[in-house]
Length: 311
Image 1 (cartoon, rainbow, N blue to C red):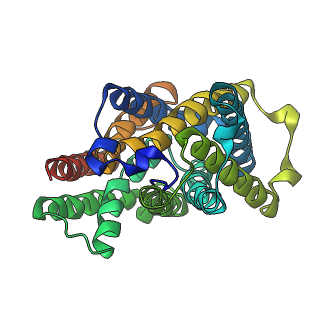
Image 2: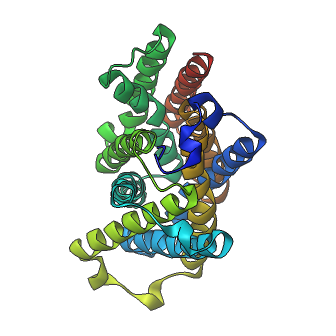
Image 3: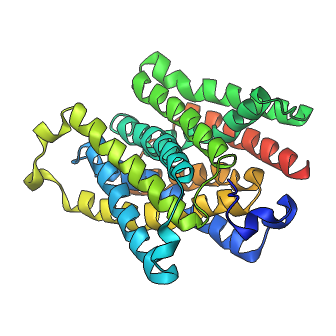
C-alpha cells in the first residue's frame, strides 16, 4: 500500500508499520464502532432497500471525508495518479460493494450477530491468500485456520437444516472472502499518499457500485419514503458518521500504518460486540450453534492472530 511519491514509502517497513498510540486508538474505534454496525445494518434494512441504503451510506461518508481532507490538508491532498485511483476503486469495490454490500443484503434474512460471527473468518481467508502467494504460515496458524473452518461448519449448520436462510449465510461467507481480498490488495497496491483520501475514494467507488447494483435489482421500484421508519433513518445516519466516516477511515488508515496481523484482531472483537448488542437490543436468539460455533471461530482467530504477531 505504499506509494513511490511519498517520503514515507522510502522508510523501512518496520518504521512505517510501527505500533504507536495512534494505532491503538484507531484499533479501539474499529473494535467498538464496527461491532455496532451489524446492529445498525439490521435496523436499516428492516424498512430500507439494502444496496441503495448501503450505497447512499458510503457515498455520503466519502463526500464528507473528501471535504474534511480538503479543509484539513488542502485541495492538493486529494490528488492521485491514475494507478493510485484505479487501485482505490478496486479496493473500494472489494471492501465496500462486495464485503459490506453482501452483508447488508444477507442481514435482511439472518441475525446481525450470526453475520458478524461469519465475517470473523476474514483472518482465516487472509492466511489462505498469503499461502497462495508463496507465504508459508506456521503450523499453529494452519491449526487455527482448520479450527476456524470447523467453527464455520457449526455456524452454517442452522442454514443447512433450514433454521435460518442458507442463502444469507452463503452471502456473508462470500462477503468475508471479498473483504479479505480487498484487505490483502490494499496492503500490496499503491494507493493515494494520504490514507484518508484513499479511504474516501474507496467509499465513493464502493458506494457508487452499491447504487448501481440496487438499481439493477430494481430496489428503486419498491421505494417508499413514507414507509421508512425513524429508527432506520437514525441507524443510517449512525452508519454514515460512525460506521463509515470514522471506523472505515480508521481501518483504511490502519492498513497503511499497522501490521496486517494486528489490524486483523478486530475480527475477534467485533463479533462479541455484535452478538451482545443483537441479543440485548434486537432480542436475537443465542442458539447453541451460534454460541458454540461462534466461540470456536473466535478462539481460532485468536490463535491465528497471536501466532502471526509472534512471527
